[in-house]
Length: 436
Ligand code: S3P
Image 1: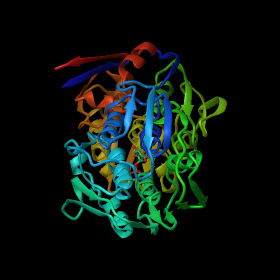
Image 2 (image 1 turned 90 degrees about the vertical axis):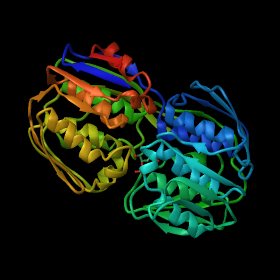
Image 3 (image 1 turned 180 degrees about the horizontal axis):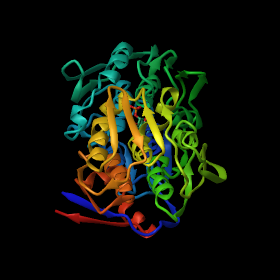
Image 4 (image 1 turned 120 degrees about the vertical axis):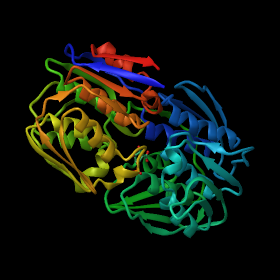
């Protein structure tokens, strides 16, 4: 088990880049595996979650060269070319890996069992099983919520029109990926917009995908062409450094080459609502995705209402937003965020626990949190509950707390942000990880 010790210290200064985007890395491996020909992926997120996905594709008969590493070469097997795996496919901690892969496998003529760690084994797969069964696949898991291990038996699929009950890119993507091998078009209609990397990548590889408001339609036929993908820096990782730069007096941090897809950057909107935009420079396009540099400096924050359609656009940044809210003047209300309860941990309950232990004023609601600020935080010993985003959010809180903050169980940081601690140290943060 690893543990992180953090203290408030000097200002954070410097220019850094963060590892590749997790969502894009998962999709890049899966989609190039289904393409015709050899693809190259640069900037792949060489972290536990995405490595699990790459290894699963290898177990399904795809040649993936370059692991572990950030430069991969993948020989696609075509849309229906996956082979029966020799054993269960282990997706580790990764909900995205398991849910998207279920969509991929639903259209293959094979049966496979998907397993995960303790956290993933408690996460519902019914949201994926329901539409995939409607399309003609068999998806079996434990109980009504279809908890992992999950066995999927692919079949001849029929395209459907599916209204997702929640704005979830994982559900949308699983259905669209199954739709690649279905008869007739598949349409997914969401209650609010979620990240659109699957649509962009399928389109860039020659697939036919049209977006009309909240509806996305994939028309199958033809094949996906191999391509070269450069994965931009993960906004969701950059966000921790951005927030630290915002909160620690005297700081100035520049984050280079960060993904700025607007379905991901809701935190920038929230920060604007809280009084003070983050400056963005050198906007450019990389492999069909907008990218730019972000500069964070301290600014006064005010409490704000964050909910509705903004939530899916900052879904992974909510734990961090709660830390920012403790330092904002007035009340911050986060609502419509009940999805947070079925992430790697119950992020509403766990962040309420962590911040309360550090002296913040936090009230839990079924669909969110109410936080009153600003409160001086004090160091405490807190538990990440094995959740990488909780661990990193607690680290940011520790950088503005009085005394030492000890975060237990920080190995999980490696699932999405390898090198986080070293990068924080490089910027001048007082944090040390130790083995216990
Ligand atoms: C992801 C979608 C989000 C997000 C997750 C990655 C994706 O989950 O929380 O970290 O890559 O599609 P939901 O789609 O369940 O909201």
